[in-house]
Image 1 (tube, helix red, strand yellow):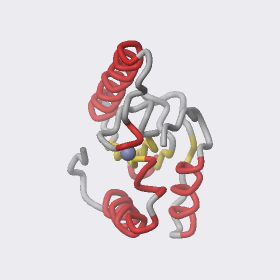
Image 2 (tube, protein in one colour; image 1 turned 90 degrees about the vertical axis):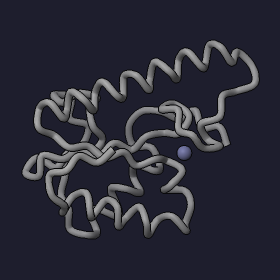
Image 3 (cartoon, rainbow, N blue to C red; image 1 turned 45 degrees about the horizontal axis):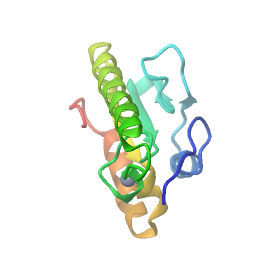
Length: 132
Ligand SMILES: [Zn+2]
């Protein structure tokens, strides 16, 4: 399914927040002062989580498939978004922040929720190694 929803408070993002909150994590939302305005920020851990929409951020899944019309336009647009994402994550790393990307599609599939939750916990509680 092609999702054109973008911006704050998307369903997958709310699901991520709900899971982490229920596990006892506390976070700040959409911190403008950090590169890429990360969706969830854990200041004491110096870690951030991005919840990426598959279409807008060009995920290699069905949801990231380009539309059949104006394909060149969308390819350039999404490619620009991906480059910006990479720049933002590199900038965060230089500032000493680790980042994790959670893809929209992984929050929509019930069978992958357990995996995603474990991944987020490992990321938040783990050491200082960068997660890409
Ligand atoms: Zn995806």
